[in-house]
Image 1 (tube, helix red, strand yellow):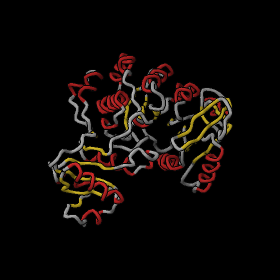
Image 2 (cartoon, rainbow, N blue to C red; image 1 turned 90 degrees about the vertical axis):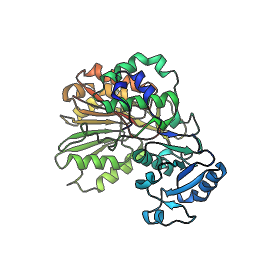
Image 3 (cartoon, one colour; image 1 turned 135 degrees about the vertical axis):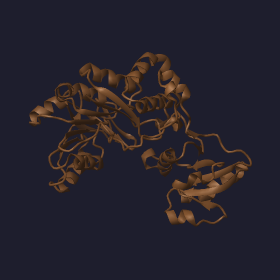
Image 4 (tube, rainbow, N blue to C red; image 1 turned 180 degrees about the horizontal axis):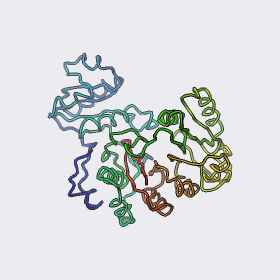
Length: 381
């Protein structure tokens, strides 16, 4: 948790002004002591980089090396692991990662190193500098001036201080495009301490990008629960269905559906790329025709009488899916885990729509990654 005084939590504007910057791009100066964090392949380049600055490396942590390698290094520089980065409190911690955003972010070793650093230390420097205005460093400098009243209202209605701080971090990142204001939540994504999958639950996994999360949900529901997963793209659905069928049915109760979720039932086209998938009404090269379904009618057709959890990560269609699940939400009041970052106004429109469907929901909020994305609303009655 970042250190923000409770006195600054009375309004979003005060909290925005008080937020510390955990990850900066202010390079060390000549003569400064530096602890270098880098990949093994970048070790020589990182040392040259620090030497060119005129700074003095005092320790080195290779984030993709095992513990023994970090303990026994050359150059007369101490080798440390992540747990020992504060051995040199006077040193600037420098994460040197040329590929931090140059490859798909979730495949970037530097991205994982930054996330680990944010959980171990309060502040570090990233080099080389980030390229702004990529998808993961989007910025909307007028967001608060245009939507301040709505943002302040959401802020005051969040359930707890940790949610308010996380919400302020998300807004600050969107205002500045700087992911350095974020400190990821101390729990795994979709496993909020209160809003989580429990034994015997029926779970709707909206946005099943792989079977990995489905398996975690199925393990949490146990033998008396089930996970309904949805994948509209044909090749991904075939892989998902095969992997699910190969799992032991006594342990994993997973039901794949060959469709996406939306506000109603209709057909459209899906384009899949490295950065994600998106929908279009017009055919185009590389697009697949897919079927979308509203959750309410699908549940009736399949005889599913109750839903306990709905997780949504559907590439900007979260509000559409909520509209198509309105009856289920009013009737069952399931726990909700909703991505809030695909569209610029998701932070505002998602809670407004949810409360128009069922006003009894209370909201929590969390940031789960160290880039401008992976913000989640967690809601329950």
